[in-house]
Image (cartoon, rainbow, N blue to C red; front, side, top):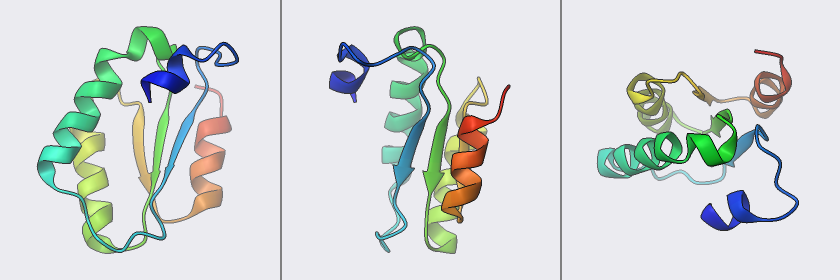
Length: 93
């Protein structure tokens, strides 16, 4: 992720779509804590970007919701539907 943020073509405020809909194994709570920490600690570099998490099952959705709740900035959202995730990223704040 740091390579993306540092890439010359990256523009602050780009949205991030984490596409986990083909992964049926849920992540751990430790992974969620690390992810939220990374997102929030790089908010200045990323232009306070939004992050969509697209998942396939209820357990993964609940873990993604944990990320939503832990995010102080409210820039993380969980989705089952790819089109809804893309629409949220594209919508004005």
